Length: 166
Image (cartoon, rainbow, N blue to C red; front, top):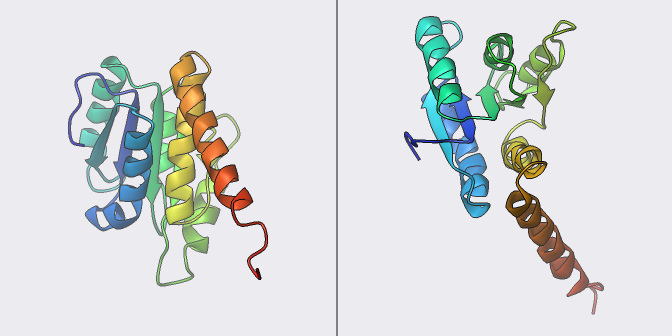
């Protein structure tokens, strides 16, 4: 989605290769009509640029951050340390141990700097978008309604075929 004048969600990933997974997050945010902005910034290789982006996107209206990272997975924690907004972490799958390394790195944040960590990979990316929309829905009923409508549609799909052996 690039740069949005007034994004409500800032989506950041540590590597361009994470886009294959985080594209699902972006698709879900678009489905809910949530304005967002995406960036590739590294906690280790571009710390100054990351800090500047966090301040900038927050000043333009971001209320939630979604940060995706693999391996050492420091990015969500670094974002959380620089904002008072909720930060949702999406661990990336890795060749080493399937993303368990990323997951464990994210969930072991020190007390006082929380990161809400989702599932590894695509499911986590989608759920991060849904959870961000639910957070926004606390003060904006249209977003809450969008999530509610999606859940009703999911239920209808299941109920439309209750007996797959038939």
